[in-house]
Image 1 (cartoon, helix red, strand yellow):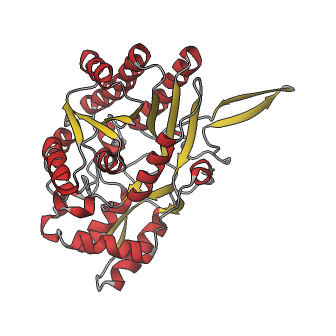
Image 2: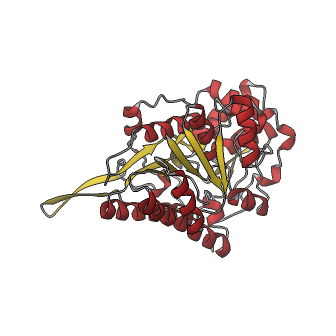
Image 3: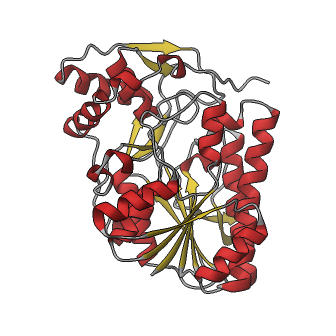
Length: 383
């Protein structure tokens, strides 16, 4: 297949590019280094120094013989994106090209405006580029489980049947985001649904939970191919942050009561999910929504698991409760469905002690690169 990856330099984008190229697809990766830029601006650089996208692609080809074609440019520039889509004629587009951090979006007006404009313009431009040049193309959009919030009912996979005053209909599941970033993801879904039902686009929206991990089959070939592993309070997901804290001897930072529960998945499983979605496109005129996670944990449970794995490696891992910088329920009901990807063939990588220990051992190789002043919360949800 010809696959276009928007945000191909990201934590998920680069491993996806390698994975699909290794499977024999013609892969085109686009990025403008926005995430690298704002990470530098906020002193939130990744644990490992990653080569730029063109150098990564060159090293990957030298090591494997597989080619990733790189385009450097901004997908919020419609003329640039239109040229790429017209020239590549992709059969699938994987859309990662968004500002990915909830804390960054809540940092202040400038960060909120950048998040809103970048994320919505990127999605809007992609829709129109596909409509004009490859209307049969399959758009695979990375959403987030954070769109749903934490309702006091079971969360379905994107859609819900409602009976009201004797009549029934099917609607997008009610969503209530906890940050501006997550709100832009809701607006993405609404945009896509409008154009799907109006013009017959085919779209998969993957509602992904927080991802953890640093290892994939291709990334393990060379340090230069590792993903952008962030561990700071702005771009680092909670598990990755806890792993680095355990190695650095910094108490694991549990926000508030620690009862916040979410669905998590290993980076390797994200690769599986993307591949399954690309290989099994929906029908034209269908917005297919799949909840992308494998296990649910509270923050307290995550802390205990990382603590136990650390002790198995001789690390003294402590846990510290901090006032919650976010505005969120700290104890709540959480029961989301997630059968669609399993039905397509997802083989989960569960968060066992062995899996956590292997990640801790990898982080320990880069212990001297950890900057502990990036770990404690620097952003609050207060105006």
